[in-house]
Length: 141
Ligand code: DQA
Image (cartoon, rainbow, N blue to C red):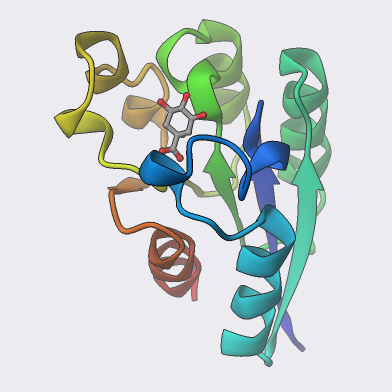
């Protein structure tokens, strides 16, 4: 059976390609995820993007108790630095969740250097642009 992984992207990541290209690159989210699909033809990669904290939490709950997933790749955007509720949702589910960031959050402003979700994720990958997603998927296989 094909491995199935859920890729969750949080707030403002729908604007990739147009949003601060010097920081996040010029590819759109769909272009990044299409390339990810092409890199992992044997893996079923489901995509979800939301700008809303509650919707991200609902999706984590849904996937967390859906036995068909091998894991979740999560770019929580700015909620990474602020959302105890998303951290609690990750802690509440049994699935491994890998934290990803396009930019190197540790090389950025002070507030971005702190991740509230890192401690409840199985690992964190930050700073490799679109390749961060590829490394995260690979870590779940
Ligand atoms: C980000 C880093 C966050 O600090 C920021 O709020 C984002 C994107 C990244 O992928 O580099 O929205 O998660």
